[in-house]
Length: 399
Ligand SMILES: Cc1ncc(COP(=O)(O)O)c(C=O)c1O
Image (cartoon, rainbow, N blue to C red; front, side):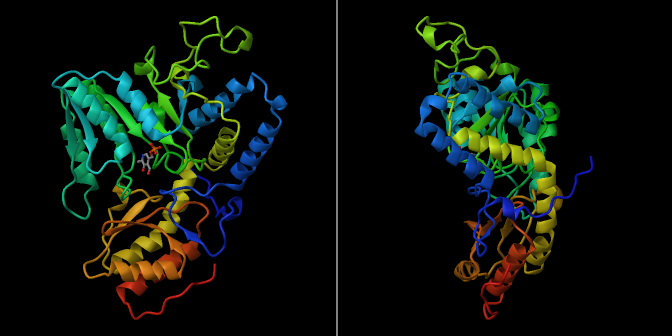
């Protein structure tokens, strides 16, 4: 598929000119359209007469079909509205079966929100957690992926992992991992928080049982919003909250005390969080999803690839180590520092140029988006050079 080249979209965001924000993996800046939608949502709540009972249903559906389209899911009623990735993981842990003696496969240094629920599940069921570690080498993606495939065995009940590692952007081959999971009858749970929106994800190709995404990073949404695709294993399951909106006939506000045993039709609706009709946050998320659908995750990734290329070259020539292209995302990647480079010197260089990245142990996590341009990358290259050769002059450079 040919991806139309995206140009820099900085004007869609309200970032100040002198801020070089290369940290979307931490928190996305809000697009202007989301900001405006949030303000309109607040004004709507000022006079609630404009909020109709049907809005308690339609707003969530607006999110469902947009997210379904973004990840290639045919049926929007497989999308649940959740407040956080941890919530989605808890839904998965509650509903996926694990028996005594089985194992749950996850990754070394996986984000804790996709670990704790599985630890509890394993303890409750008498199962084991199998943590797949990478080899201790600078380029470890290929071998790590092989180890994951080897770790999935006849006793595996659940494989739960991200598409890219949150610390350094290592890519996991979810098509191969999904195939292996299906071979042994294991469920596949994906935490897409650090990838969906900026890296293509195709539900029909990967066939996850659950795809869980907190929206405040690569979906460019507000904090406390999220979405989850839930596959056939979740049909007829038990939600975390028994929401009244999730029950059959709840559209009829006059008859809510005719209590219903049945849920609303659709696999995922019953798993929606309580108060899933959020008249401020969800229009914001809807506006952000529209932007992403317009740009497409493939084009966002391609834009980040073009931005990252000179940075990766410069980092390698300064002695940083970087994962091989094939096993590394371009919207989120780690630069491991060479021995002898002073962390404090690097921090000073970054601060002087108002460059925002994350420092994770001995690695710099860089996570650009379409609001970044070559000047942000140029400034970061200068900062790395300045830290590697401490006498080099430092200071801000114009956009
Ligand atoms: C991989 C990953 N998953 C999930 C989250 C957020 O989890 P939650 O929405 O439960 O706060 C983060 C936050 O950094 C993350 O990196």
